[in-house]
Length: 133
Image 1 (cartoon, rainbow, N blue to C red):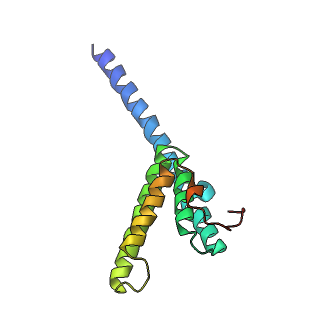
Image 2: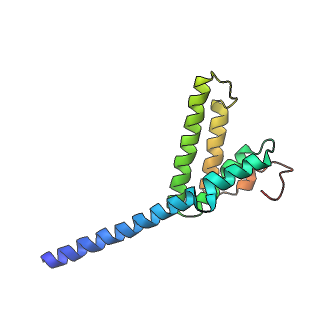
Image 3: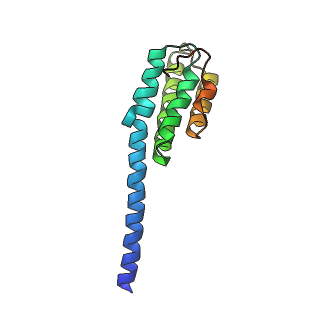
């Protein structure tokens, strides 16, 4: 009986362990590999420097990261939430001078969620944004 219990316990631990490794791998890839969230979407947004494209790049970065799996979606949510929270603090410190108010933060978060949920980021694509992006 102890052997049977031990085998069941080990199989559960190994099964959960492999799921966690997969989740952590997806999270890492969503954050860095191919640069879904940080390098690619952000650098494309900076490079494009295109008016009214912010929400598109929010949605695209979250979408790309979430396509890697639940870990990628989790990483995208953590990064997006942290980014918005940091901007709220800097707004408070600057007394709102940054132009990134509560309404804009809510709109950014809506675009983030749109992308993470697997919906097409092109919904937020502004007219005239080069096809490169």
